[in-house]
Length: 242
Ligand code: SAM
Image 1 (cartoon, rainbow, N blue to C red):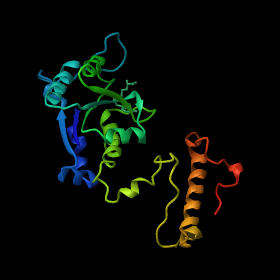
Image 2 (tube, rainbow, N blue to C red):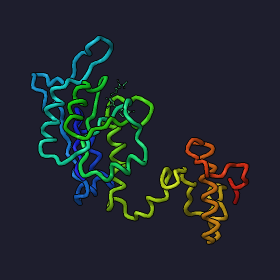
Image 3 (cartoon, rainbow, N blue to C red):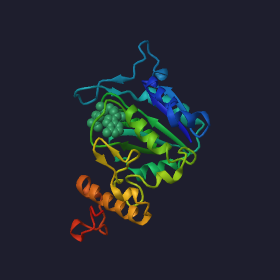
Image 4 (cartoon, helix red, strand yellow):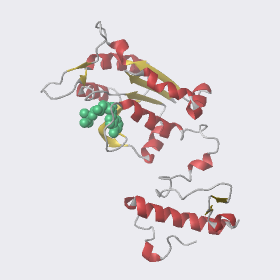
């Protein structure tokens, strides 16, 4: 997958050389190209922002540097998806991560200040698939950390990224949409806390039942809105059983 990121803080993405992302970049699974928006600002101060029309606090990112930066990236692109991280965008979910992991080319446009002049988004939408994407109902200072979140969630779903693809199936928000069950490793007793005995039983059927019950219980307590109509409720006597 090719990924272009436009930002006024290219150094923010130095971490992409670490861990699984770094390996994916060096073995060619991910081709990430970072672009400094200020390279497309041609005044002495390399200005990328200006005061908002209509008044109000804060500054808005100017259209000209964005237009030029995107022209350069899109010139040799084959059906890319251009992503504008924004708290005003559609909410990013695991299902969105799966959709984006099928793309061949993603372009991330990292906003700062009060955001990017709307005409940049409209102009891009006129020549390319475009989406505004929010990573949650809160406001960050810039689109860089949102881009990192989206990219990491997407990249780990690309075949070849994670050593054992089986591990991707049993995660929170996958398959049945429930939260994951609690996990444990050795030793079986630590500081007076024991691993639930069923996990030491070697009985796969009972382990599976216990894990599913734990998923339901956790989801009911923390994120009840994720439960589906067909999921058993506590009254069914199934939740928390060992
Ligand atoms: N004035 C904007 C609003 O109220 O919708 C917020 C601008 S925010 C201070 C600056 C930039 O941070 C945005 O342009 C966007 O790129 C990024 N950003 C902030 N919160 C975000 C979120 N929840 N999801 C994705 N990007 C976000």
